[in-house]
Image (tube, rainbow, N blue to C red; front, side, top):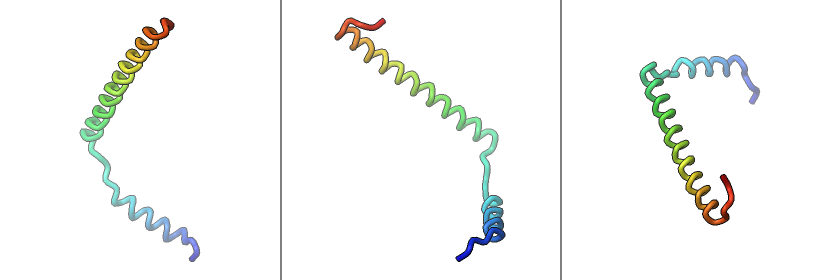
Amino acid sequence: MAFNLVKFSREVRAEAVKTTWPSRKETLQTTGIVLGMVVVTALFFLTVDQIIGAGMRALFGVGS
């Protein structure tokens, strides 16, 4: 069962032809959703961090 480079190349080309790419509109929409979720997640973790920090300062009286 030897590796056949020519056959492999043909199969890769055949699969590449089947590839469908999203439209510009779909790409921009998906990018917007991802960036929005990044902002929401960052705000969530900022809030959690601030709450934990406030709790630590209240318990131990240290921190800025």
